[in-house]
Image (cartoon, rainbow, N blue to C red; front, top):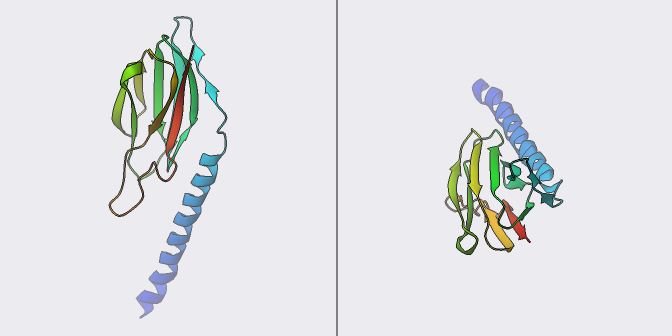
Length: 144
C-alpha cells in the first residue's frame, strides 16, 4: 500500500509533464507559418532548412523557383515519435519518401513544373490519426 502511495503521485506528475510538453510543442508548431522563400547561393542552388517535430514541419510553406536546383535539409526535433517525409510530384521531377532519423537528412532535386504541392509525414500509429491528420504537412510552392 505504501508503494502505491509513493508511485501514484510520481505517475501523475510524469503524465502531467508529458501533456504539458505535447501542448507546448503543438503551440510552437503553430507559430512562424509565414511563407519561406528559398535563398540561392553563389552556385545557383536554392537552400531550405526544415525542422520537423511532434506533428509539425517548419516552415510549412516553402517557395522555390522552377528549374533551379534545391537542397532541402530536414532536421527532426528530439522526441520518441518516428516521422517521415513524403513529397512526390512526378511531373515536377520530385520523389521523396523517406523515414526521418535523428541526424539531418539532405534531399536534392530540380523542380521542373510550377504549382503548389503538399509534403507531409506519412506515419500513423494503429488506431490513431495519421501525423498528416494531426497537422504535420506543408506546401512546396514552385514559381516561375
